[in-house]
Image (tube, rainbow, N blue to C red; front, side, top):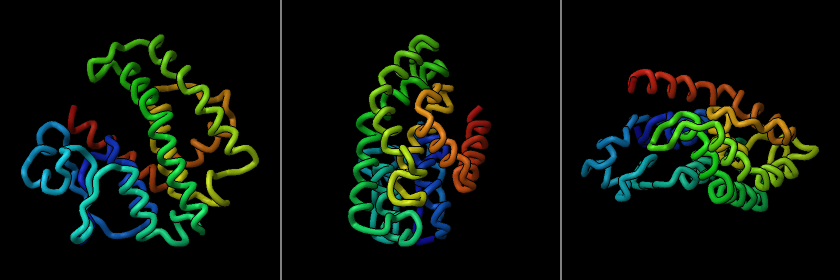
Length: 211
């Protein structure tokens, strides 16, 4: 197989698998874990950072999930995940950077506090603290979605996928987004897509295997 994604569906690799499923392109999935398999010489030759996910496409090796997804959209997504013009492509990059810088950490910490994992105390109060940190960026997202179904243009693109893949953690942590009705409805619309549902089933199977 010419295109291979490394990582577990229950990790950030899930967003890359989601993109590949949306695109309908052939790929191989190597469910590499972060408990040693990401530190082997073979994997470090692909991603010297030893982090997941990573992608190998022919001679090209890529790391960072958002970079991988933006590449996949450009390489395979014309008329699909890739926006229709350069302005839209720039907006997709904008939203991908935005969600990582403004939203990822509080969402991830909310998830960890909700589950009591990764040395985070299980605490509804601390989940709410993280939710409070999201109020301003959620207002930005909600405003961007006023009167429209998707972030860029009139259809689902890589911009929506990348942002929704981070906000997925809000649903897993049972963080209430209902006060921002545009964003809440948009997220449900994105996560209900068959490609995302398929990756979610893979993630559930991985979780069960890990115990």
